[in-house]
Image 1 (cartoon, one colour):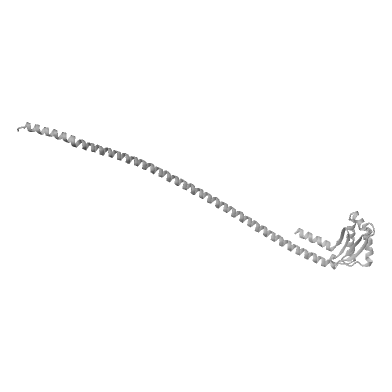
Image 2 (cartoon, rainbow, N blue to C red):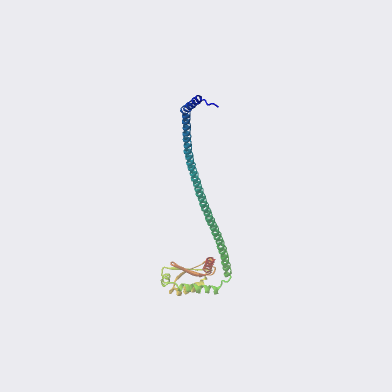
Length: 245
């Protein structure tokens, strides 16, 4: 085999020229373009990273905001529940107080009604008892009973203050003696003598009768009235009965 060195040299020169031409007119622009593309890609990646970081930060802010909203919502709900519970408790307490007051008022009203009814029935029964006693004593009228009532009247006169007794016997004073039944003229002088003795000196007396006394006597002067009668006794008994009830 024979090597053509001229041809080999020329081909080598052509190869060198081709490589130079490729390196000068192709590889360098291509490398520059590739480098530009790489730089652009790196910049794009950097921007993407920045945007991702910003997005992550925004997401974090959103999460924090959502968490804040959730916490605020829970706080508002808790406050609303607490307020509602307080209002419910206040309403229940007010209702319980009003119910207790109504119950107490109803109980008090019922007690007052019962007490009033008891008083009314007691008063009616007492008046009936007094009326019955008055009817019974009317059957017992007689000299002995009159003397008994007269003794009580004279005792009451003797127990009067001295000034009252002296005033009742002044010259210009006339007394009024009232009997449950008319005092007979024959008994009027004895009545006057006994009353005068009880007063300490003679007295001028006018005589009247009043069946409402039932039995007994009353003596009336300008400044006092003394008596001993069934009307007074029964009235006192009635007061005691009603008061004790």
